[in-house]
Structures are given as C-alpha cells and as structure tokens.
Image (cartoon, rainbow over all chains, first blue to last red; front, side, top):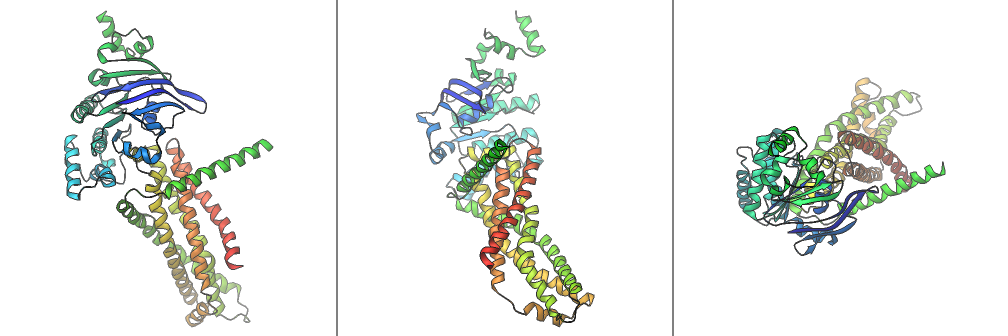
Length: 251
Length: 255
C-alpha cells in the first residue's frame, strides 16, 4: 500500500500539486486520471521520488519514503518497477540485455538463472524471437511490453505506469491494459497507472482518482465514475462525441 | 548593468555548484563493480579506439605542415637543417599532441558524450535508472571518465609518434632536408620531461572534456533542440577551459 498525505509540489513558484491525499491499494490497479497538464505525471514522479516534494508525506507501507536518504531509498526502489510514457528502454542494449539489466545490477543469481528469468519475463509479456533486437527495431506496443518485462524482472511490489497506452492503437492499448491488470493480480502488486484514456479507466480501473489543476477532485471506482456529480470529472469523462451520445441515450 | 553582472555571477556560481555536486555523485561507490567494469571497457572502444583514426590523420598532416613551414622560415644557412626536426618534435610534444588534440577530442568525444547523456535524459532513460535505485550519474559518467583518463594519454603518444613521422615524410619527400638531418634533429637536446608535461596536460584535458560534456548532457531539459544546444555548449565550454588550463598548467609545470 502506498499513502500520500497532503502532498504539495510547485515549479518556479507555480503550484502544480495542491494538498493531495490518497491511498493506493495493494493488488489493485489504481488509476490517476486527468487532463494533460493537470499534474498526473508530477504526482507519479513525486511518489517514486523523481521529484522532491515541498511538503507532505509519501508512505510505502509503514516507511516514510520522502524522508529517506538516497541510500535508504535504494531498498524500496529495488521493489519498484516503472513503465515510462516513451518506454525508456536503453537504446544501446538489446531487448534481452534491457530486461537483464536490473538483474545484473541487483540480483545475486547465476547467469543461467538470469537468462531463465529474462526468458520467463519476455514470454510473460508475449515477446518471442526478439531477444537480440534493439529498441529502435521494435514497434511501439513491443517497446511497452519489453519495458513491462524489465519492470517485473525483479518481482516488484510496486508498479508505476506513466500513460502506458499513449501512441498505441486501441487493440494494442487494451492488450497492454489487460497485461498490467493480470500482472498486478498475479504478483499482488500495488499498481499506479497514470492515464487520460477512458478505455483504460473502464477496462481496468479498480480505484480511480481524478486530478484537475493540481487538486484531487474525485475518488472512486469505475462503476461510480459514470454516475458522479463532479462537474469537472463529467467534463473530462464525457468529453468526446461518442461519450456524450451514450450519456444522452442512457438518460 | 550591475544587476546583470550580479545575475551572471549568480548563474555561474549556481552552475559551478551543480557541477561539483554532480562530480560528488559520479565518484560515489559503484553499485556493482562487474557492470561498471564492462561499461568501462565499452567506453574504451566508444571514446578511445574510435578516436585513433582522426587523431592519427590530423597528427600526420600537422607534423608535415609544421616541418614544411619551419623549413621555409629557416632558409638562412646559419640555421642548421636538423633544427627543423627539433622544431617539429617540440611542437608536436609541447602543444599539438596535448592541446590541439584535446580541442579535436572536445569536438568529437565531448559532443558525443553530451548528446548521448542528453538523449537519455529527455527520453527518460536516466529516470529509469534512478527508479531502479541506480546512481545514474556514476553509472553513466564514471566509466567514461576512467576510459578517457586512461586512453587519452595513449592518444597523445600516438599523436606525437605519427606527427613526427608525418614531419619526416614531408621533409624528405619534398626535399627540404635529408632523413639523417631530421632524425638527428628529433633526437637533439631532447628533454624527457616534455613528454611528462604533455601527458599531465592530457589527463587534465580529458577530465575537462568528459566531465563538462557529461554535465551539459545530464541536466538537459526539453527535447532534441536542447540536446543539440547542450552538445554545442559542451564543445564550446570544454574548448575554452582547455585553453585556460593550458596556460595555467604551462606556467605551473614549465616555469
């Protein structure tokens, strides 16, 4: 479980996150949704410690993460996996080497065991016959899947995904969503996904928080989202023509 | 006007502080020595071995030109011909092999380092390293520093050798002097400390090129345009610092 309490963050005097308090539950896919520029990515990067926060607390179980030193954060970081918006695969390494990288850095296991783990992770995300390819030779969907394989290589307790569907076609996007949900359940991870894709929300959103202008405006489940009376949330959820039509029909 | 100067000083001190903090991160204890060793070997190839060609070609022609220019400017019979060889040797050892070669490497290696690390920054690869709990500064920069600090002196020795050889070729083929005169000249009044002086300068310059370029790349914000700018800044700042330290080191070592 990850808890965020009264988190505030600003850049050059401009407040980007204002007093955010939320709990992300274990074994669930927790979604942060909101418009572009609403502060979703800053919140996610603050939670993982890539941004220093101004005030507030970030708890990983019973450990106050934001007060730890770089050295002490390392232990928790070894339990984190993250899928970045652009995949962030290492260009100079092959698919196999990318997935193996965290194992080389942190796992005290033999080369054979590492190889076995790499192949298992790649198979788990349905990447076959691509071990020797470089990231530049992969499609967008494959890159995301390799990045997921790298993220789960060390059996993380926490999985963070920053816009996992951006730039993907709807079918591949659903496959990635399903994969993240399956892995979350399989490894009982605390997964936090940052997205503005309503398909993802309706497919895998077990706990959703809605951020607008740096404020948490709404919190609930995918079943509650369609009947919410939060105006800014409704503007976001029913922004496109299809959603508006469906809403009108339902009414 | 005073405010502008104050701002400039503040910006400089701010950058200097960030540079020192980055170096502190770079020299912290590596996570896994085996991985760092492997990375260092890769950098020997990327930054060192691939520079041999350009250094050899430029040194050869520089040696040739120095010889020919010295010959045409010392046509007076009171100057013995072997002085041409001596002039080429000392020019190659004292200035070309260390300073000019360092300026060339600032262009080749410096821009490469800044672009590579800058691209890793804007494509979130550095964030990915940080998330894994890896000291990204140390992992990315320390192997490059070790590789250049060790390999650049080798490049300097290659530059000296090839440059003197190029001078001999040009001198004899153009007929401005005999090979015997040239060989006598390059051995005449040789001061071994000049080699040490050149290598000391090279080590300093290697540190400047790698650390300044890595600093420029590591703190890039934005996209490809900013990576390009960082790359240019890396070359410009490294070159200026090389020239500045050339004066300081020359004063300290040869005075």
